[in-house]
Image 1 (cartoon, rainbow, N blue to C red):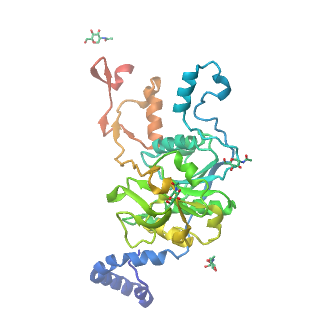
Image 2: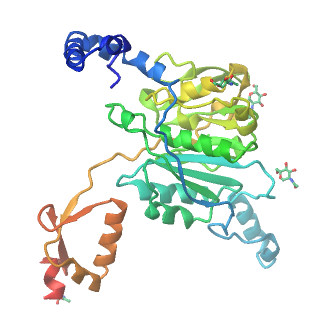
Length: 383
Ligand SMILES: *[C@@H]1O[C@H](CO)[C@@H](O)[C@H](O)[C@H]1NC(C)=O
Ligand SMILES: *[C@@H]1O[C@H](CO)[C@@H](O)[C@H](O)[C@H]1NC(C)=O
Ligand SMILES: *[C@@H]1O[C@H](CO)[C@@H](O)[C@H](O)[C@H]1NC(C)=O
Ligand SMILES: *[C@@H]1O[C@H](CO)[C@@H](O)[C@H](O)[C@H]1NC(C)=O
């Protein structure tokens, strides 16, 4: 209840007077209260939250990756003709990147929340991260309890990871413009501090972004804070620092909103030693201002920013987004156990577990089968 102002509360002596006053207040100053909501948000930034939660669900500090594919090793190319060798060299990929196991770690923080697309996004992102050596993936889920389904999909990549459950406090969830992903990122910051990770690089990478693998070699050696363009942001379709003579001098972003650091969450990386200099660094529950306030809280100065991505001329990260649509309900009125005799039993159960669709015996789109061009009821197989 951000509208309840302290002057009103202080005067309240009896409950009914207070209620009457609040009602009158809200009627009379409803418009004013709406307009000044922004100030409330700023005040709330400093209020310690009593109901913040952080559960470490699963952790794996080992790197079990074998690489998504094997390329021909140099020694085994003897039989290839010179022409073939030249072709292979000119077309050979620079990925997976080579590592001697001592490069700075990248702590890649992904806030996520249960929705229909969640598992699909995690799989896509995980397969990108499989190519990145020396990376610890912190996946913070906006849930009160640990999702075993989510974990099974993170775990299989073999990437060192930490799966956190860090729900948004209810007071914010009720808001029209709820600050999504904040509780998650705060939890990740807290995990980094609690586990005393003071070397390496912090990067906030959402599950609905697309990452060019070059991004990782660019941010890995960030000295303080590095910045780079993010594609598909706002009305310019880009959010980027403005760079002249190799220095960041300003920003190009279609939503200035009086932000000192008008950047996207995916548009910067922070060195952990530098972060540790600001033990109070945090992110506010203030939709739209998370990046700005976070970068203010670490005391960032313009001259401390290193432009990456070839002086911010390349786009190595995109805010692709997956447009949410409602999970459909599929109507299956027959005994569902019978479906276990064909693949559909297990398949539909899996989709339901992921929240991709719902099965109902009373409503929704009737499930049908197609055989040799004609539509049959599902029960066709079991009659
Ligand atoms: C490992 O590789 C990095 C980057 O290529 C290099 O700076 C470092 O010196 C190497 N360390 C060892 C022990 O080879
Ligand atoms: C960025 O620009 C500066 C100044 O023009 C130049 O010295 C530097 O080499 C450039 N960096 C890259 C990666 O191109
Ligand atoms: C962090 O916050 C505490 C409590 O508000 C304060 O005493 C301390 O000076 C702050 N530290 C820094 C480095 O700002
Ligand atoms: C599929 O339909 C075609 C033509 O409608 C028919 O000739 C064929 O026998 C059918 N095949 C099976 C397996 O039912």
